[in-house]
Image (cartoon, rainbow, N blue to C red):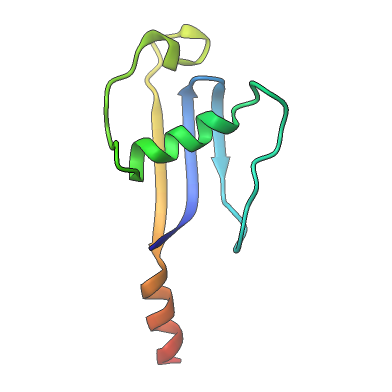
Length: 89
């Protein structure tokens, strides 16, 4: 199992730019409809989920601007590695 350390998204659906460092533990995405919660989850799924990769349509680009590339970066750390390091100290 892995833990997300940092998530960076640009030009993806309703997200022009996002740089998020989740807090340790459980994080909740709370907001009104069409505020980007599902887009964040879809971006994570595209990078580390079962459906890695894929193709993008015009609707996946922020403000339909296909001239600016979509970038999604997910930095993870293995929880097993963290546990193993904790045992060493």
